[in-house]
Every structure is written in C-alpha cells, then in structure tokens.
Length: 221
Image (cartoon, rainbow, N blue to C red; front, side, top):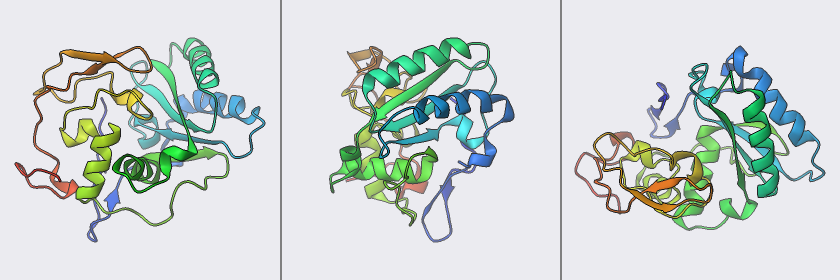
C-alpha cells in the first residue's frame, strides 16, 4: 500500500491529505477517463463519481497500484461489470480498476459509520463527475470522532491500526483485502461483499495514529 506523504493535521487540527485532481499521474489518465466516459452514459443525473487512493495522491506505481473509485448512486452490477472490463483493458497499467458502489444514504445520519464516510469523501476523494453535493465544503477535524468513524466504516482502519470490522459494506471493500499492519494477525474472517476475506475480529490492534487525536496507548471512545 502506498501511503500519502501529506496526510496529517493542519495547524488548526483539521485533516490534511494530498489528494488533488491535478496530481493524477499522466500514465493513469486513460483509465480514469475511461471510467468517467462509462459513468457519463448513465441516465441518473444525481449519481456521483469520486477517485481516491494512490492515483488521487499522485503516488501510484505502474503495474502495482489500483485505480480506486467510489460511484455513488449506481447499481452494484454496473460497478462490478465496468470495473472488470476496465481492469482487463488496463491490465498492463494497473493491478485493477476497482469501483465501489455507494448509496447517498451511506453519508446521511449522525452515526459513526455515516460520519466516517463523510470524512472519507471530503478528505480522501477527488470528485470526477456528478453534482458533488454529498461532500461538505468545510474540512473535518482529526479528532476522536473521525477515528471512530473510520474504524466503523473500515475506510481508515489501516491507518488507525484498529481491527478491521468483518462486515463487508461500502467502502470497506477496498481496504479489507489486506492486513491492517505487519503487527496484526492475518487470519481470514468472513467473506466481504467482493468475495475477499476480511481480517478477523481477533486481529491485534496497534496504536492509533496520533494525528487522529489519540496518543499511543489511548483508547478512542
């Protein structure tokens, strides 16, 4: 996994990442544009397409990185079929074109999962197409609530060093393919929605990242 070297906190405590549309490596542009073209053929004007991961931060590596996207408001079958077709088409460019289908409801509500999804969308995604109405303008703070939200949704579990939940809902599917860290156990848990194995619930947690508002050894509650 290629980490984002700019990820951290701003002086005011808000989250900082290196995702930018202009940082997409030129070599990966054809794959990104191909997804955008397929997305543009959908009739739902409320659907949104977002890019995240190493391609969005400019840190992608040819042949080994994925092109990771979130398509909100699309059918899971569309995401699966387009992802498979483009993974074959760009097999020499990237490891795969992974499109995670999401629902607008995933970002509403005050529970930790919905909050974590909003943090993820605001700070780790680049909007590519659609109205972009689900991303809030104001940045989020890297506090305990963000840590809880990321752990609940599995989006940031690899960063936080927390055990990955075994449920395979969006957007967990991208991160559940790998162990949380080299210090964690990697015994497989139940299958996720993508058919891959999740890290078991008994994985050994490492310390939480300090920029998420917790000192080593502290428990985020």
